[in-house]
Image (cartoon, rainbow, N blue to C red; front, side, top):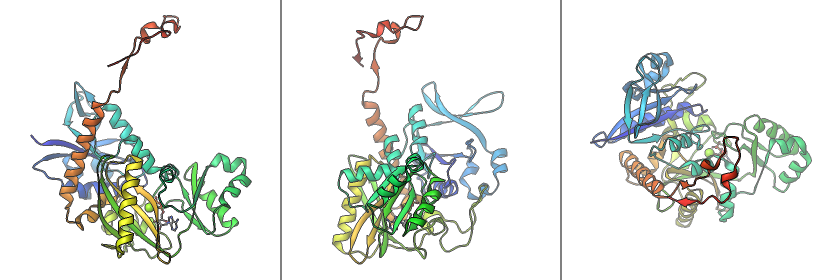
Length: 407
Ligand SMILES: Nc1ncnc2c1ncn2[C@@H]1O[C@H](COP(=O)(O)OP(=O)(O)O)[C@@H](O)[C@H]1O
Ligand SMILES: [Mg+2]
């Protein structure tokens, strides 16, 4: 019997289209002898669809086609199974049962713990980081604070909320002035270079902060790494075991990597509105890169070690990509961010190390199954008679002296 894998992608995120590309790349490479692949596409307006047609990139040019020929479903727990059930119609038929969910989603509302929380609430096993790892992997302030706690090499940074900025601009400026200009401003949770700007004086700093606060209520400001070389590495595993991929150098024509650089490469195609996925977009696999990156052994080793520690500290799982900034003059290495579910699942970084995409997907699913078993082996419920103590009048008399008992 094949394992039924529900590949979930899309969702209400600026990286919606990139997720479609990543998911289709993965579905094409999954071992069909071992796995039955069930595509589950979440539209931008949060409707869930399934159907074989969703394995074909061309259908995403026309959302009406999906609405007409796909099956609108809900994923939930029913009679001991995880099912995709038809949402509309007289008979709310179960379309498919699933064994495991495989989120291939990017960005806020999906990669950041939101979707993982839903999956965990239902109880279905799933691939990748759990809620906590996913949240910490999306919020740049949170990940940096965690990494600072274990002394990983990072650029100096500060972070604050919009409310701090509104109420006491001077205090916020004072905080930023503990850094050396030029600085880079980033909304804490958006990703994809949205709302990012580089500033080298107070005037542009204020403009940059106004801009960043349009995207997020939390903003990170950090020192710019000069003579920049950007390198990425993938880490696969969970908090117990980790292994590292080959390291790539990402090449860009701009001062910092833009959405265009990341996903569209040299092509001019624009992804805007709708669900348009134009010919030139190949997801993260299309970025200009040098693979393997040109690095001396010491730097390579340092990146591998820091990446492994970073992955473990956040409680990440599955297959994440960790991005580094190197000052080529001083040869100093700084960890920049983690991408819990990287574009194209960073398959090219594993391929360069002799592990093909099919094997990567297989390993990711295995880790998901193991993590699920581990999760259910821990005690999560605590049996008490606290509710029986509630009087009809709403009192809490019985709460006192309640005896808790571990299941
Ligand atoms: N401290 C920094 N110094 C120099 N360039 C930076 C720094 N931080 C980010 N960048 C540039 O900005 C890009 C986007 O920043 P990043 O933190 O990766 O956010 P995103 O989540 O949008 O990818 C990076 O790929 C890099 O080119
Ligand atoms: Mg980045």
